[in-house]
Length: 222
Ligand SMILES: Nc1ncnc2c1ncn2[C@@H]1O[C@H](COP(=O)(O)OP(=O)(O)O)[C@@H](O)[C@H]1O
Ligand SMILES: [Mg+2]
Image (cartoon, rainbow, N blue to C red; front, side, top):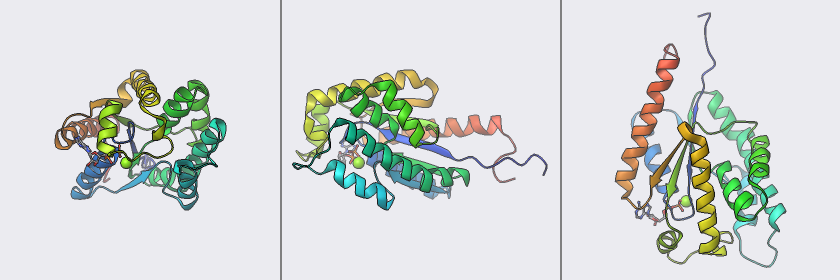
C-alpha cells in the first residue's frame, strides 16, 4: 500500500514516589495487554539494560560513596539514554506498547525540584537522553509520603531516605508536571484499592487507543 505508515508504539509511564503503587499498576496493565495479546514490554528506570542496572545500584545504594547532586542527575540521565537507545525506541518503532516504571518526570521532580538543580534544566537534559521522545501517557500515582512510607514498611533506598519533607516536595513537583502535561497525564488517587486504580488506568488507555484509531484509521492490522 502506498500510504504505509511506520508503526508507532505507545509509551505509558507510571510515576509517583516509592511505595505509591507504580510496579503494582504497571504489572496489572502488562497482564491486561498479555490477555489481549498486545505486544508490549515492561521496563524500569533507572535500569533494565545491563549498563542502566549497574547505574541503578550506584544510585540507590546507601553508603559513604554517594554521588553529589549533579553526578546523581547525570547518572540517571546516562541510564535513561542507554535504555531509550537500546530498548524503548526500538520497541516503539516496532509498534509495541512500552510500559515504563518511572520516566524523565522523576528527574524533574527528584533532582530538578527536590535537589534544586532546576526544573527546566532537568527536563531539557532528559529529553536529550530520550532523543526527544516523551510518554504518550503518564499515570501519576499520587500518595502522601507518610502512607508511602507505611507501605514500604520502613525500607528506604538512598533517595527515599531523604525523608518526608523532601518527598513532599517531589510530590508537588509531580503534580506540577501533570498540570502542565494536560491530555498526556492522569493523576490517580493512589489511596484507592489496586483494582479500582487499575480500572481507571485501563479506561484511560482504551480512550487513548480509540483516539489513535480515529486519527489513523488504516493503522493496526492492515
Ligand atoms: N492501591 C494500593 N493500596 C494499598 N497497598 C498497595 C496499593 N498498591 C500497591 N500497594 C502495596 O504497597 C507496596 C508498594 O507498592 P509498589 O507497587 O511496589 O510501589 P512502587 O513501585 O511505586 O514503589 C507493595 O507492598 C504493594 O503491594
Ligand atoms: Mg516499584
